[in-house]
Amino acid sequence: MARCGMWWLDAPAAYKNSDGKAWADGAEFIQTVPTSWDETRVLAGDIGRFIVSARRKGDTWYIGAMTNEQARTIKVKLDLGEGSFSAHLMQDGADVSRLAVADRKLLSSQALTLKLAPSGGAVAVLRPTSP
Image (cartoon, rainbow, N blue to C red):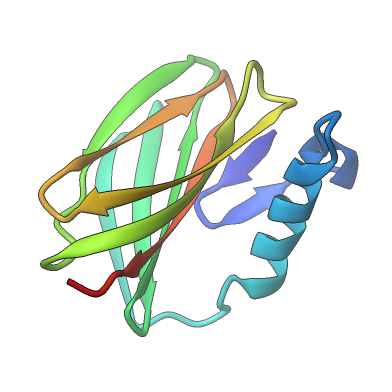
């Protein structure tokens, strides 16, 4: 599943797992991701190998990652504000043609671990939570 930062580039069938849920998550993301941003940051990267960027709209952060032909696991320090976040994560599953979806809580001091298949990527939507 090729993803480019915030943009997903693939045929619709690539976002569908056998349970059908991944398609709903991927379609919802595509429908709700903003088209203009208040702030953009590069969180990690190595030219020609991988990049992780974060874009903010209001108080919500959208994190996008992509890699070259090398599978990799990336730990990204958030540094996106104080407090805690509710994170909706969509990343490569068993391979680049499967989507793994998870929800979790993260503290701003924690790192986000992204698992990228060869030529794959991930997105995460982080919303602040009440203390």
